[in-house]
Image 1: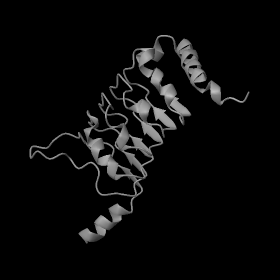
Image 2: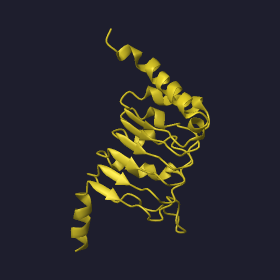
Image 3: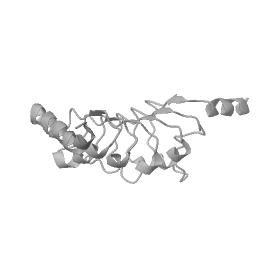
Image 4: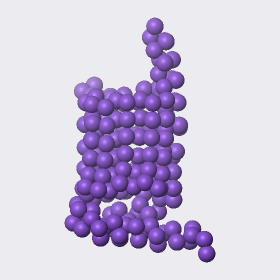
Length: 173
């Protein structure tokens, strides 16, 4: 019966582990929590509303070559740096309601088409300007960040202008 259960995990394409109390830290035994079971066909993974502080658990994500959507919202992540190469095919990344102050790592995830960064701690426009280098992105959410709240209308104009400059060469002449 346990063999059958393992086979069932191997055929999963969507997995939601919200409100699971996952922290991604080491257990007293010295082993990391196993956040990703052997699910090689996983396309969508939701780890929202947990206690994740560090993206170290993403090391295991390299075993998920078909992962297209990752929801890490409502955690305590403060960085995504050095782990972007673990998710080369990811199209949607949800990092809303975390403690991010920088986009380091995220700006190099070139397959992203949707990126939610709302309600984080971005407080300077220069910090998020690298998002304009994402060639496939069509949906970015940044509301609720200090940088967007001071003057929402001016922020929107500046942000759209940033993308216009980076994509001007794509427009027909």
